[in-house]
Length: 103
Image (cartoon, rainbow, N blue to C red; front, side):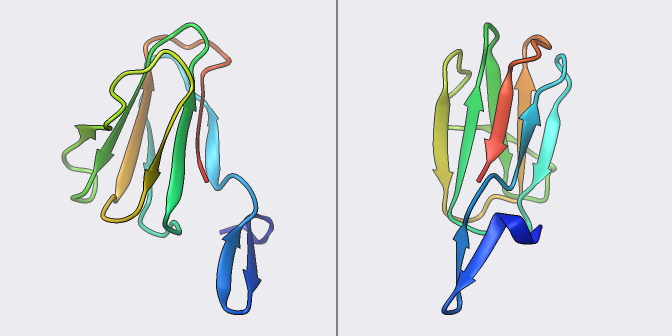
Protein backbone atom coordinates (compact mmCIF):
# COMPACT_ATOMS: atom_id res chain seq x y z
CA UNK A 1 0.00 0.00 0.00
CA UNK A 2 1.16 3.53 -0.58
CA UNK A 3 2.48 4.99 2.65
CA UNK A 4 0.08 7.97 2.48
CA UNK A 5 -2.94 5.66 2.78
CA UNK A 6 -1.97 4.02 6.06
CA UNK A 7 -0.60 5.04 9.39
CA UNK A 8 0.85 2.63 11.97
CA UNK A 9 0.11 3.45 15.59
CA UNK A 10 1.43 1.13 18.32
CA UNK A 11 1.44 -1.84 15.93
CA UNK A 12 -2.07 -1.15 14.66
CA UNK A 13 -2.83 -0.05 11.09
CA UNK A 14 -5.23 2.85 10.67
CA UNK A 15 -6.73 3.74 7.31
CA UNK A 16 -6.29 7.39 6.46
CA UNK A 17 -7.76 7.49 2.96
CA UNK A 18 -9.08 5.64 -0.06
CA UNK A 19 -7.06 2.54 -0.96
CA UNK A 20 -8.46 2.13 -4.48
CA UNK A 21 -11.19 3.76 -6.53
CA UNK A 22 -12.07 6.00 -9.41
CA UNK A 23 -14.47 6.48 -12.30
CA UNK A 24 -16.17 3.49 -13.89
CA UNK A 25 -15.69 3.13 -17.65
CA UNK A 26 -18.57 2.46 -20.06
CA UNK A 27 -19.99 -1.02 -19.24
CA UNK A 28 -16.46 -2.40 -18.74
CA UNK A 29 -15.90 -4.25 -15.46
CA UNK A 30 -13.30 -2.93 -13.06
CA UNK A 31 -11.88 -5.80 -10.99
CA UNK A 32 -10.11 -5.06 -7.71
CA UNK A 33 -8.00 -7.69 -5.98
CA UNK A 34 -8.64 -7.72 -2.24
CA UNK A 35 -5.90 -10.28 -1.55
CA UNK A 36 -3.52 -7.79 0.11
CA UNK A 37 -6.10 -5.26 1.32
CA UNK A 38 -6.62 -4.58 5.03
CA UNK A 39 -9.89 -5.71 6.57
CA UNK A 40 -12.41 -4.59 7.50
CA UNK A 41 -12.86 -2.49 4.36
CA UNK A 42 -15.67 -0.23 3.23
CA UNK A 43 -16.85 -0.74 -0.37
CA UNK A 44 -18.86 2.10 -1.89
CA UNK A 45 -20.36 3.25 -5.19
CA UNK A 46 -21.77 6.61 -6.21
CA UNK A 47 -23.83 6.33 -9.44
CA UNK A 48 -24.76 9.49 -11.31
CA UNK A 49 -27.71 8.59 -13.57
CA UNK A 50 -26.72 4.97 -14.20
CA UNK A 51 -27.01 1.68 -12.37
CA UNK A 52 -23.92 0.14 -10.77
CA UNK A 53 -23.56 -3.53 -9.87
CA UNK A 54 -20.95 -4.70 -7.39
CA UNK A 55 -20.02 -8.38 -7.25
CA UNK A 56 -17.57 -10.24 -5.05
CA UNK A 57 -15.56 -13.44 -5.40
CA UNK A 58 -14.35 -15.76 -2.67
CA UNK A 59 -12.46 -18.13 -4.97
CA UNK A 60 -9.73 -16.05 -6.57
CA UNK A 61 -11.93 -14.26 -9.11
CA UNK A 62 -13.40 -17.30 -10.84
CA UNK A 63 -17.02 -16.98 -9.70
CA UNK A 64 -18.85 -13.81 -8.63
CA UNK A 65 -21.94 -13.16 -6.50
CA UNK A 66 -23.83 -9.83 -6.48
CA UNK A 67 -23.34 -7.95 -3.22
CA UNK A 68 -26.25 -7.77 -0.74
CA UNK A 69 -27.23 -4.24 -1.91
CA UNK A 70 -28.01 -5.51 -5.43
CA UNK A 71 -27.83 -3.14 -8.41
CA UNK A 72 -27.94 0.43 -7.13
CA UNK A 73 -28.90 3.82 -8.57
CA UNK A 74 -27.93 5.89 -5.50
CA UNK A 75 -24.95 5.99 -3.17
CA UNK A 76 -24.49 2.65 -1.43
CA UNK A 77 -21.86 1.04 0.76
CA UNK A 78 -21.08 -2.20 2.54
CA UNK A 79 -18.40 -3.50 4.87
CA UNK A 80 -16.14 -6.47 4.10
CA UNK A 81 -14.86 -8.38 7.10
CA UNK A 82 -13.30 -11.51 5.57
CA UNK A 83 -13.16 -14.05 2.78
CA UNK A 84 -13.45 -11.81 -0.30
CA UNK A 85 -10.63 -12.16 -2.84
CA UNK A 86 -11.92 -9.86 -5.62
CA UNK A 87 -14.52 -7.16 -6.22
CA UNK A 88 -16.06 -6.33 -9.59
CA UNK A 89 -17.72 -2.98 -10.36
CA UNK A 90 -19.84 -2.46 -13.51
CA UNK A 91 -21.86 0.59 -14.59
CA UNK A 92 -24.66 0.37 -17.17
CA UNK A 93 -23.18 3.36 -19.01
CA UNK A 94 -19.95 5.33 -18.97
CA UNK A 95 -21.13 8.48 -17.26
CA UNK A 96 -17.96 10.25 -16.17
CA UNK A 97 -19.26 10.76 -12.65
CA UNK A 98 -20.01 7.11 -11.75
CA UNK A 99 -17.58 6.52 -8.89
CA UNK A 100 -16.41 3.47 -6.92
CA UNK A 101 -13.99 2.89 -4.09
CA UNK A 102 -12.61 0.69 -1.34
CA UNK A 103 -11.21 2.16 1.86
